[in-house]
Image (cartoon, rainbow, N blue to C red; front, top):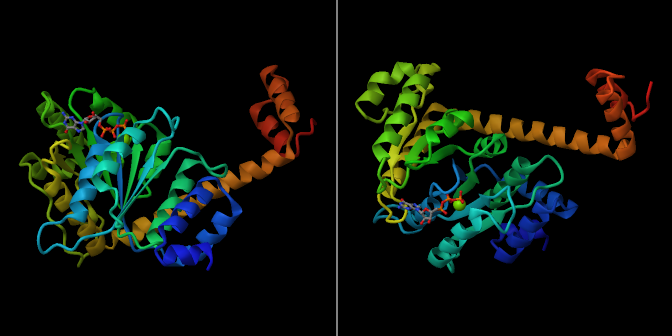
Amino acid sequence: MSLANAVLAGERLALARLLSQIENDQPSGRTALGELFPYTGKAHLIGVTGAPGTGKSSLVNRLAHHFRHPPPGVPQRTIAIVAVDPSSPFTGGAILGDRVRMRDLSGDPGVFIRSMAARGSLGGLAPATASLVQVFDAAGFEIIIIETVGAGQAEVDIARLAHTTLVVEAPGLGDEIQAIKAGILEIADILVVNKADRPGVENTERALRGMLELAHPTQRKIMHHGQKMTVPVPEEGTIEEKHWVPLILRTVATQGDGVPELVKAIEEHQNFLDITGLRNERDRTRLQTELELLIQGNLVSRWRQKVSQTQYEQVLESLIARQISPHQAVEVLLDGGQRP
Ligand SMILES: Nc1nc2c(ncn2[C@@H]2O[C@H](COP(=O)(O)OP(=O)(O)OP(=O)(O)O)[C@@H](O)[C@H]2O)c(=O)[nH]1
Ligand SMILES: [Mg+2]
């Protein structure tokens, strides 16, 4: 049986082996992914991002627990977690979070957790993460959570992989400003003020609400009364009707407070995407982004094979000495590193 077929048959060892091959950018991993790709497109992808230490891993753990042990009458769902830690595999918080998760979720065959610290050689972290997510999707996991430390563009790219993006804030981090910097409000579908047991939670929430009002002025009134936006009817299909105003919710991840409400909000957003047809639009954008990142990565790596480090440094020196302009340098380098 091929590795892809073993993954489709639900073999966990095969799944783990394929995830490693993909992380290491092995050709065998790409072959299997090619076989699996037609089976993707079913999972609901949830991105969880936010500043270091805001409680993302604790929250993801709670969410996973909730999806595995739902209230009566609600179907149980399988869940995969991809924790992306772009820093060292030994210092990152993903490791700590995983230990917490292992204790709560280990032994449950409906849960699969993967930490990713390595950067694939082609195209960077976001495409590698996208590939892992595709494997989980094909393997039949119904919910896939992608946890990233929200610091820069790479994390925003990864968050864009998701259907529903949660941005996690916590009181007392000066996080309002960080959120603006990372452009994170633009990607947030749900803003979670975690550590709501800590002092300063009102201030954090007020700051976020203020920023939301700036970003979505037409929704000012609705937000003012602290009400959730109702899901619009798609009859007219105008852009306004497809507008989702991010929800702000408080949680205490350590206790599980606010988690049922958060799950409800995620489901509401999922419905909104389905009803408005935005899910298809997001899928399209997502795959297009992935394609473009892969093209960039591939072109750069092909080019690197043609130009030696010495040639590259010679051109760089000429540039620094003002003998050639940046544009001329690019021309020279793309022509195989020959000086004019
Ligand atoms: N008081 C309080 N502490 C919390 C809460 N949620 C998480 N913590 C604590 O905050 C610390 C960081 O939690 P993590 O879940 O590892 O946070 P994280 O955002 O995943 O951290 P990184 O992955 O390192 O960015 C841990 O000590 C948690 O126990 C909360 O709601 N209230
Ligand atoms: Mg974490």
